[in-house]
Length: 252
Image (cartoon, rainbow, N blue to C red; front, side, top):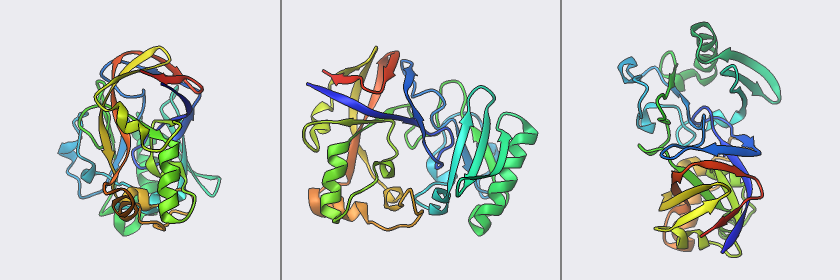
């Protein structure tokens, strides 16, 4: 079995736009470097939660609850930790997230942009020491079969943007849902070895169109009615580090 990787992504700020990668270095027990390194906490999140460790997603802005976030695209410079926020292709805010002044500039922008959804003044949280502000308490890699995405589109009656599923690795298998056969097995991708551990249960974030920022398709209903589950993709844990690249094969 060999399936080809089509795209690799990371999401430097939880809930914001993806960053495409030609390659990524994986480290055992960690996710993709800089993936969900930062997150935006509404004013209702106590500052005492900002410990640098993992925090549950309900403490942050997220597409499932704040689809307005999809109106923005972002660019993150890993060399300087600088985030540039764009709206309709034009820069609207920029700041270094590890610098108090730069972080304040980004916080001020999002506080104004989110309006009542900010629930006060927003703040940027950063994960440290190999942690990530993902929906799961352990750093994992998400793998999405593009054929499965197409099959969900068959049920919904229209082509779906794979970006709805906010995966790290998108690949082509010969048939939809073959990724579930990998659960409980180890796979090799490039120089890395991963253990596939579980299906990815989906939430309302998938209802949000990543282009229009509108909730336009009920993905959960489509999954339940068409397939009798609400999963799409699988989670994997990195057990042996290494570099993965677009075009690499996933093999068992």
